[in-house]
Amino acid sequence: MTNDEPRTLFILMKLFRIHSAFAIDSLRSPLRGSLRLSVLLCAALVSSFLASCSPANTPVAGDDTDVREFLTRYFSTWSAKDMDGYGACFHEQARVTFVHQGAPQTQGLTDFLHGQKLCHATASVPMTEVPTDMKILRDERTAQASVRWKLTKGAEITTGTDCFTLIKTPAGWKIMSLVFYND
Image 1 (cartoon, rainbow, N blue to C red):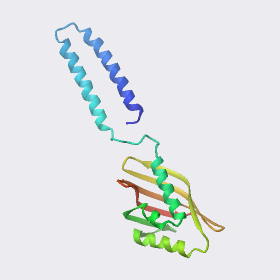
Image 2: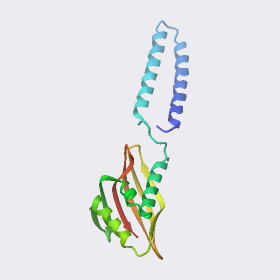
Image 3: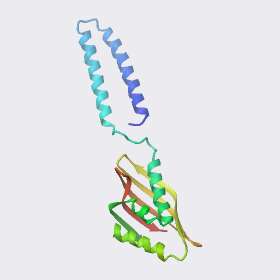
């Protein structure tokens, strides 16, 4: 349910109650009291059912601030050569795939992080990578993000896309899968 749905439900329930009260009052029969009770119990049952169908703690639609902050940290730790912080962004079972000329090259996390450390260690000039656009689809347990980025290495600029699958853990968001490519 979105933030407006509980209020809408409340208004609908109130209108239903008012309408049913008029209908019951017009009945002038000895069953009027039990009919009113039946209608109220039915309304309570319907509202209970609707409330149980909504996931608990669902983020407000469009609120992806925590995912954006996580992804920004991912890029900033890499650019700062903070390989421990960068590695902490990944789930221990994560897989990473680089797509080169249409062919996927997949690595486990240990090999990928080792390659990233070597990349920084052997670079002749500092490298920085910044996100330029983020498209995020998420719920309370998982998120998918497509992030356009710009890599600056001295005067050389490379652009590309990272496609993330994230999971929410007790420690926060973690990368389960990263598929990336250069333009």
